[in-house]
Image (cartoon, rainbow, N blue to C red; front, side, top):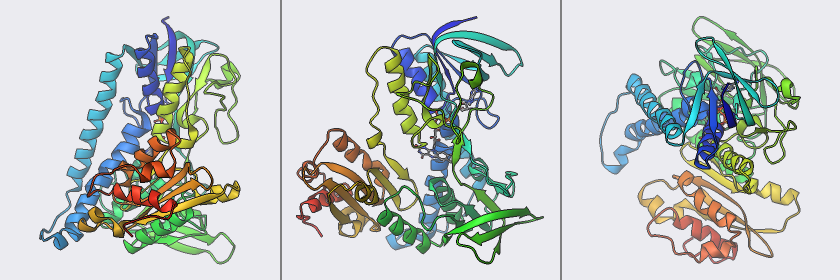
Length: 469
Ligand code: FAD
């Protein structure tokens, strides 16, 4: 029986970052991971079946779409043909390099990777069932649960990963479906729907709510929906899927208006079920330390401490947005707290991104949240049509909107839709961490010509002196 300062269960962005930080701080640390989707690689959902493979396909399909539909206007005449096998192979190669990278970082930081399924076997004990069927029990002063999440099911819609797929299946379709129905207009559904639309599928998105991407600033979400509709995506909002029948070559979905009324049947070659994710704690032995997750399966924490002494939880398995960088933040804070330092996460400054085209990125509060909180604010907005770099690149869709406190000018929220905004939101994360006023950004020199000038011009707009629109 090995003895550790910390054993982390789960090797995704929460778990692997916790393990690396623990190693850096000189703690004796192990990370138990059973791999995802039958594989035996580190990196969790994010690296294996989440962030990274989805971004690989988003990038490749965007290039294909550009070559097919947009190169002509730049004076480049080409007729691309799709090699889906190679597109999937390059995705697998990149993912493989990334998961190996985590393995390397484990070695570098003296983290023991315990391969297999981990179960808490009472206070301070973790039993690991290895791939060879043998079990070992290890002792730890601290146990960090970082077991992540899994796709949420929907009654009446059985995933078979052939005709009805979840996000994992949608990352590896063997051919482009003629028609794809996506159930759920959240980030994952719209990203993967975009991939297959660009590659040739007719995509219909069915959403229960009367809007897409809940949580996104409403004005931004409306602009986003208009952009996706223009690209050919069809939306059926305020609609619920109540059943699915898998046929020989297609799926029939029963769809009803949420407000009541006649049901209709939608048929599609493939259906992607993307109605959200739920915490994953199967077989974890939580009962052995008296932890009971809430109704949604979430493990309750206070500063990453669970109700059981010496047991901590981070990432998708606990409260907050299910995002890799949120898990990473919590990993560092949790381990630093364990090591006697002052761990801290600023939950008000966790950015969100949709990696479609245009991209959407935001941080802080939406206009609706500020109104609901009764907070007086001023807004500055700048369209990419007035940004010179966006103009010469023919990428003028979208805007940047900065929301700042009416009295103090502190930046409270930033919402961007447009080209490469995922790469620019970090500027406002830094500004908000430093409690910057919008004027601080408005008076900061930005390089010309760049899209980042739109960030500055929007900040100028808060005080009403946007100069370039
Ligand atoms: P996970 O990454 O889920 O890792 C948990 C690990 O624990 C897994 O390896 C699992 O096998 C292992 N495990 C579970 N139970 C046990 C056990 N008992 N014993 C041993 N091992 C166990 N987030 C972003 O920030 N940006 C994105 O662009 C993004 N894109 C996404 C795209 C898709 C298609 C999906 C599905 C998700 C995406 N996410 C994205 C979300 C992101 O993947 C998750 O928020 C993140 O992976 C959560 O990290 P985690 O460490 O909490 O858990």
